[in-house]
Structures are given as structure tokens and as C-alpha cells.
Length: 297
Image (cartoon, rainbow, N blue to C red; front, side):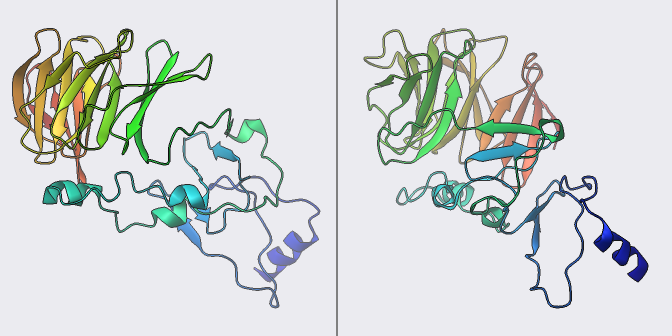
């Protein structure tokens, strides 16, 4: 072991990347300060506490998609829904922070000490633009199918439309009485839907944004998430804090089915829409959309 260490100290360059995606380095000397502890993500990726190898305005993903970093002031806003007053206990539980080390994983970034990694070692992302229309927290966003419009929403209780070609913004009316929890575009359409803690789902058309087209009611708890089916685009699903999932026909403005499932978020399987994933605390349930049966948990 000592011989190997001597050989490493004599090397003029660092070794190849190890399994964590960082270069192999020589161990500390007896007089050197203790190294910063590592934080391990759920995927097993070791992330240094100071994460100095990542530039402040640059996020780097490995080939497996791991390795996200964010600045400390952004971390202060990471709690997605924040203080919204007295709500259903289960919704407050859904919004509460996990006991994990998210703030260690998404650590504060200081000035970089190493050059940017070669492109062959991962995918790099740089900031193109940054928009701020208010100081209210944004908790959700979604692109239209053609990528020309981005919708965002949150504590301001109204959605904002961002034109990706002109960078101009347009507000939808403030019809929700509480914060918006999710926003999703209908595939290949100018329609979008928003869900809210006010227990409603609203349907909008960005070509006529003066008012919502329809308000879906029926949830008895705060609506936490929604999604459109990728193929049967008239099918919209929403879930609430009590684990109720509702299937809506947006063309007929009616609820066509109610099942029990997730409380946090729901998403249809892309492309096929065969399955619906529903998240609830530490469990993800997979439902068959055709038979409405739970396939996996």
C-alpha cells in the first residue's frame, strides 16, 4: 500500500476517471487538513460537500443523468410550495421536506478550481436566459408540444406564458384562489390545464387566454398534480392529497372514473400512455390505464 502511494505521488498527471466520474487523486498528506466528507445521492453517486469541481453557472450531468448542482440562494427556494397556511394534514405532509440530505446534494457552488470537463465525459448545460416576473415562488412548468411556449405557475395563483422565440410573457387571469400546484399542456394543442390547492382543475386555451374554458370540480382535497394522456389527448388525470385520482374527459367536461392512488404526482407513460405512475410519500404505484388496475407498487 505504501509503495503504491509513493508511485502515485511520483505521477505527473491524475489518473483516469473513477466510478464516480471524478479523477483519481493522491491521498492527503499527514499535515494536510481533513478532506470534505462526501454525500451520496440515491443513485450511489458520491458528491463532495463543497462541489468545487462544478462551475457556478454550469450544471454537469454524467452519462447516467446524475450529478445535478444548484446555488445556495436557489436552494432557499427549493421547498416547492412553502407556507400556504392551514391545509389538509396529508397535503402538508406531502409538501414537507424529506429527512434526506438534499441541501448537501444540491450544495452551494463557489468559484471553480478545475477546468470544465471534456464533453466526452458528460453533458454540459449553460444558462441561456433567466426571467423573473415577480418574487413569488414558481413550483411547476411545462413546454407546449412544439416547444414554442413555456408555462409556469406557483404561489402567484396564475400561470405565466413564456414565448421562447421573443422571450415575451403573458399572464393568464388569476382565477385560482390558492397556489397552483401543476401545469400541463394538452399534447399537440394550444390548451393547458392547471391544478390548485383550491381543489379545482382549470382548462385554458392560450389563443384566448382572457378566461378559463372550464373548471373541473369534484376533488374534496387539494389537487396536487395532473397530466394529459399522450395519445388519448381528451383524457386528463388529476390527483389530490387524499390519494384520489380522477379521470376527466376534457371534451365532454366530465369525470369518467375515480380510483385511489397517488397523493404527490401523477404522470402518464410517454408515447404509449399504457401506464399511469402515481407517487405517494415513499411509494410509486403503476396503474394500467385500460383496465384501471394496479400493476406494480
